[in-house]
Amino acid sequence: QVQLVESGGGLVQAGGSLRLSCVASGRIFSINLMGWFRQAPGKQRELVAHITSDGIINYADSAKGRFTISRDNAKNTVDLQMNSLKPEDTAVYYCNLKLGRMDYWGKGTLVTVSS
Image 1 (cartoon, helix red, strand yellow):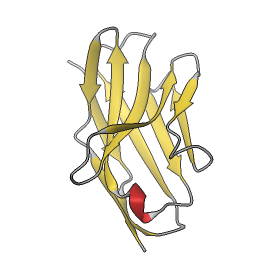
Image 2: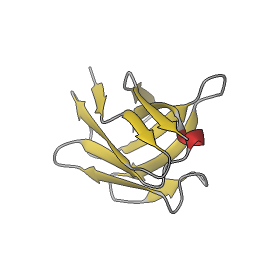
Image 3: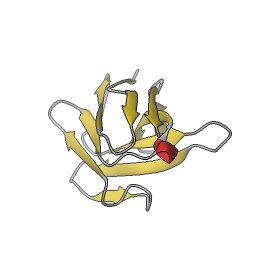
Image 4: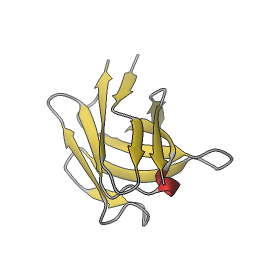
């Protein structure tokens, strides 16, 4: 079984920063895709950013220039540094791991940005 555990969410004022972390455990193949999604109230879950095991990164337009994703393959971790946060970034953030055709999800961590 693969498990993902997120940490780092919380309440922050607009313009502030937060860092989310996710650690994956279990049977994890070396070639994979890790990333972060988010889901705001009443909206669909959407991609924030993901990074391949060899470091190729993709950001959603909303994250470009403000968020930075990074990973440590040896530790099976993926982090999301979020700067210049806006109220519209308020959402539950989910860690995601893709292994082949399998998708694994964390339980999510709430990020609330006050105006």
